[in-house]
Length: 114
Image (cartoon, rainbow, N blue to C red; front, side, top):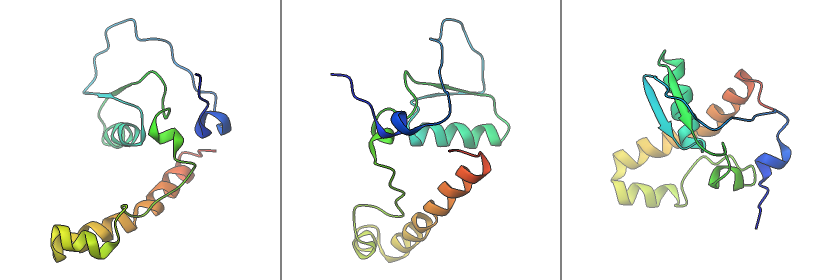
């Protein structure tokens, strides 16, 4: 069964890659082009590293099936996070997560992602 995900269906950029057939030398190789892999590759490249990101289809897995949600937390209420991690660590994590949507939209603006 062939699935078409939201990202694939709605993207305006024409992104395609040839299969990797040659050796590539880079400072960092990342396997997996979901949100985490793409984010790590972007962060490393912005830090000056040469990066090779390898995946059959960028954003096809869970990343492409999240229906466009930008989430600022976990699947747990903030107080539950604090009770699991301890108050100080829980508050620190919750504050970091609360900034995630701003980061997403800043990257969209910076790189003019449709």
